[in-house]
Length: 345
Image (cartoon, rainbow, N blue to C red; front, side, top):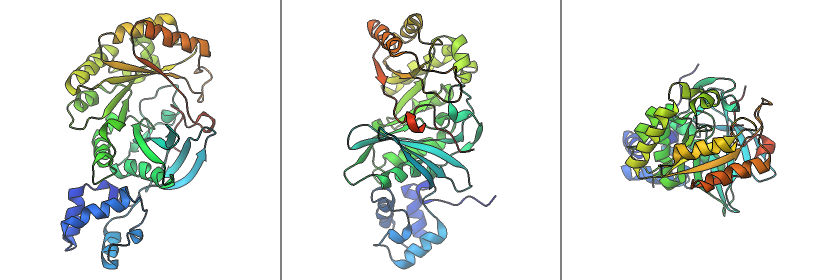
């Protein structure tokens, strides 16, 4: 295996300044250089037309970018786009661009190649975990889609809800979020960046003390340990008895409302009694529940309930004063919806 290259979007502003200093260049050139990648969204040093040829050659010899290349892109009937991207070592991942309005889009980024959590309804972990994604491999998923969009279209949100458990790749995920938020980087507001976790308690505890006001979403899917052990195997280590107090502490420390994701599976976790258990579990927390009708993957057991069952579950939560939204599933026809992204195999 060749040594891993250094990619431009791996580097912080200070690191780019240091690199330029090693070339005898002034530090002030770092921001315009990064603006070419993050704001003007070019994909080569040659396209940075206000840099001298000599500097471009020095940069090309020292670092490279982007860190991902397109293998395939598909477009859904609803406007969702899913890309299969090749990484520097030959591995590949999927990532998705989801319309949130006529001109605004959300990027669903992956944080790992494969996933070790092993939720039985999710395609992302079906073939196991291989490695973490780097800062550049995360940022460049966003920049890949930014280059695809028209001049009137913008990326308004970034969600770490693709392949992998983001909080077990903590340092790279947080650094990528900083690059995507920074004025010298992509410049997206921190409140428009959400990290989703299957319930990795140490990461939740650490995130509660971070400077960035990032959003946090927790994939809950059940309100009792017996069922959640089946749906989310990580619960066997970080049970609901540990997870909910960690979430409450996060809300208190950060001052932010937390989101709980609850995918509904027919005959498994969709009864009114289970809605009441969920409401009881969350009753004292500043939180919001996102209901998602399950998306089909590879197992016939994991099917969405009938629409009337979903509506009844939602109504029961509202009756018990839980703030809830029924999320629309985008990209189902190209397997780009929640739980359907995977690494190539």
